[in-house]
Amino acid sequence: MSEINKPTIEELETMSSRFIESVTRQLNEIRQNSSKNVKNFEKNREAFLKKEKELKDEIEKTKANITNNEQMLRDTEDLSILQRLEQLKQQYEDRETQLKKKTAKRDQLKETFMEKKMEIEYRINESEGRSKKALRELEACMFYTQLQIMPLPDESIKFIYLKISQKLPEKEYSFVLHISETRVYSVRDCTPDMPFMSNQIVELNATRDLYMFLITTRFHLQKMANN
Image (cartoon, rainbow, N blue to C red; front, side, top):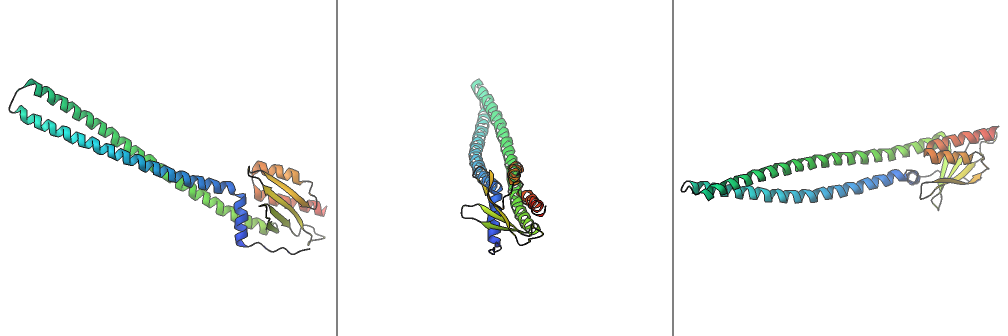
């Protein structure tokens, strides 16, 4: 029996990330979406601030016109000037109303952005926490099941169980686990033959619980070897 080296920490991290690929992909997507959301918000914010400044300038101009016309009224009672003054006052009120609406919308956008930012940060932290937890669970599973792992060139992983048989504790029981690009698990090269493995793979693809799969596989191997 050839001796199998215990995988290094780097190899464990590589193997763990292979089985939590969906978590890692989700984390990257969250980060990309976060960057896009921030850029879009900044772009909208700059456009809004520009429009807000233009509106304020127009209000100031209208106020100045009102002041000038009020001065003219002191010197004349021309009806046209009175009408113009009323128009300017109405314009001023309209601009004030628009500005209030724009300011309220800006505050709402700012609040929405902050909520999205907090949600994104939470999802990033949660995903990173799941990744670390997955690695710890894999290490614990290896210790509990007397399991050894060998990464293969085709990105499959060979699992080797030790101390299964009470009569032949040194005998190895192994299989190769592969996960496709569409996230479907499959098994090959079972040594010795493992009739229960087909049901195990169906269950794994249904639950996505790799750690329970490894533990229950050891249970089945012990039952097969010691009966």
